[in-house]
Length: 447
Image (tube, rainbow, N blue to C red; front, side, top):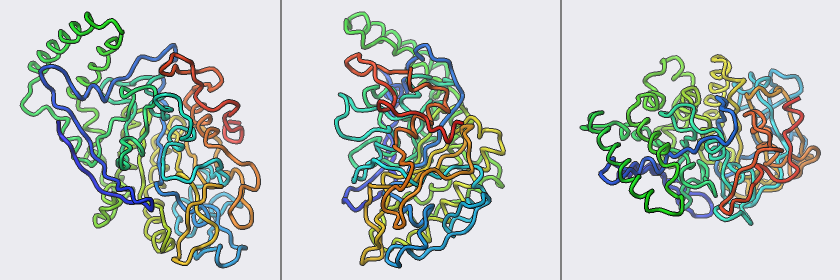
């Protein structure tokens, strides 16, 4: 077993975040890699090449300083930044997002996200559900649902890839949790770049690999014969994907940015190599890797961009982070459009909650779960608009409050999934709908 360690992060709750990737060695009695890659066949649902890139902003971004500036509010609320016009009349965003301002016709801003919890947890952004009162095993995230319903488009490309760092004790907190769907639908995590080197079969020829595959199959048949529970069923397809990845260069090529032209790499930019606490060296590159992965066949890619838990020096931190987000995200949106992927690939950008209207004594903003913001792009949706608004102080949703589950219903719709009809069975065999009862795709986005 090989463990690849990444960077540490720390939020105000004191939890230390350190990401790592474990890749099991191909061995005599079985594989660890297949246990991370199993994808069950779709249950009567047509195969699709549509995809989602989910960009999580861990820590909770300040909505009043990014997409919902309040210039008429008192100085202790207004903040230091000024708004600038975008290429859509009437829409303004922060002055430190000039590249995104030129692309406002390609995305939708939601200024009235509600229903968050005051906790550093990505679960609601990844599952569309609150963390409390989950079913046994927990709710599965969007990527795991797509792995279950659609499976892989290509046996050498995992349907669900997570590029985000690990969050403390929660192994998939920033990438997604498989919930009651099980570890077979967890995200494949080739984190920190070096991970791709560990998927190369050094010293193992394809013939030797085939021999080990045959031996593994014989062990599986033996275990299946003595297992009366049915737990062994479906492992053949699971192992096939693992061997597919090990014997194909497609995933390795998707992860290798040297395969990309210099002009494109420069457009996305690079993270700050000194900023190792927040994964700085890969902040920008992960945007490009995400595009390469969905183009290669991944159905869902999740990534975490920097750290936004600014209880102090909020504006100094944003002066560093917003230009990076501006460059990377604008490059991604332009790239998707330039490659004709904007109709099939949806992009969602958000954090776990918003920040307080009032600036505290340390020049920061504290947690504010009452309202936050989000961005949606691509997916063949209608863009160039703002949905919802907040009050004069940016502390409450004024009109059109939007639930997290509504965004999920909209993403599922863009993926060709009807949330009113499609269900997945939980551990007790009960069918569960993909979003909470009554939530529907947003009409503003789907027409």
